[in-house]
Image (cartoon, rainbow, N blue to C red; front, side, top):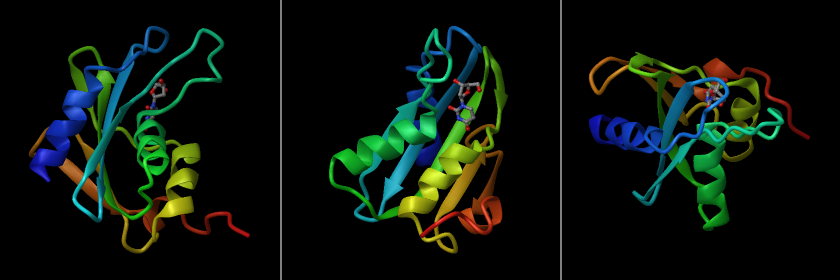
Length: 129
Ligand code: THU
């Protein structure tokens, strides 16, 4: 867990967030052991902004990965670390690829201070058809 959180912290350094000043990093662990990282990428038009979670998931899926174990998140403004809770859009994207009773979301303040949730806890009754 510590290593995955460290990778999220490293990814956060790449965050492009000039509008919110809220910098997020994510690290996604695949079943095969590989890790894809992501950061939030903001835009002057605001709505094109991509969250760190979706950056990591889209990177992985575009490389042929779809079997995920967990994702670790860190975020905050400047030096104030917070444990980001994924937005609804990111939860729905997770639900597209992940077993809600197995996939874990790790909301981390630091390498040792974090909470782990199953996706089913964060997005009960996800939309699907
Ligand atoms: N953000 C993420 O990247 N992940 C989250 O879990 C919550 C929000 C980003 C989007 C935006 O760039 C900034 O944080 C403030 O909402």
